Length: 323
Ligand code: 5GP
Ligand code: MN
Image 1 (cartoon, rainbow, N blue to C red):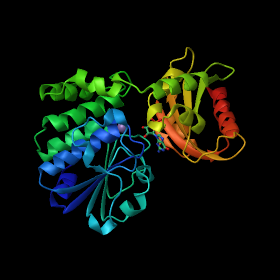
Image 2 (tube, protein in one colour):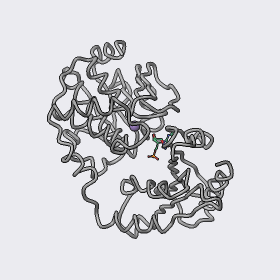
Image 3 (cartoon, rainbow, N blue to C red):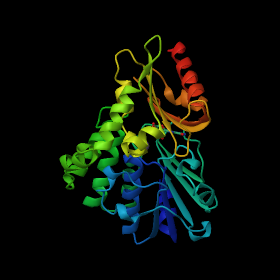
Image 4 (cartoon, rainbow, N blue to C red):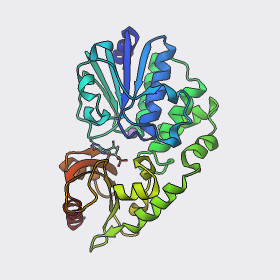
């Protein structure tokens, strides 16, 4: 922690980045740490490869997140947040790997340990929790803007304090953030409050796509490019939908197959797919995701593959035999 604080304080230009297709934790830890380091008077660039999902656009200073970075020699320190591996940040990963000091701050058990310094705590409820500790170590006072981000990261990554990742720190930090002026109802209104009509229609199609293994222990939900087109939605609108597949009685593992842009809709041709996995807590899906080249946490993990939809579904259904 001290080593990282010193690197931050002595840097000339710091790049902060989190994973593409960001979730609440990825956006929030990026902004909270970016704002805190800015308060130290340090020059920062706050980067994410993807558009920020509409539900997180209320976060203070969200407009400071840029989608492109300059040459590697522009920066002397890179802080990589909420990424199990460096390629998770997307396009910029090659450039980032050339920055002299890459610091890996994360809570994924499957973290590859990339970078020059690692601050990885799989027991942390969110990367936001680790960022909170780092901000304390930097001795930066937490204002309402930083507090709003930290609270949002914790709220979303613990599934509103429901997932097994929910720990005492989640409540302790949230309480402190509420004391600093964060209004939980206001954050909840933005994060969970209103959905576009397209998102509701996409949910309808996604629910209709659910298939269950013969033994009833595994469910698969599929979201295709055609569904996005039909409903005028995109990948950010899928966030959270897998929970419907996971909540089905007797289901131990749920998989959500999401066709990636430029994928093909014909199930017999190759396409790129992202697969999210969730378990009821009795199965370690990080290991399953790992066997497909991905990673994550024991009850929430994912991977990407290039294959046909038919083959992918049959590979996933096969997993049910071992449940
Ligand atoms: P989600 O299903 O919400 O995309 O991700 C669930 C968890 O799995 C997250 O903690 C995320 O970081 C991890 N994860 C998802 N996709 C991948 C992937 O392609 N590679 C790795 N290493 N982790 C992933
Ligand atoms: Mn996270």
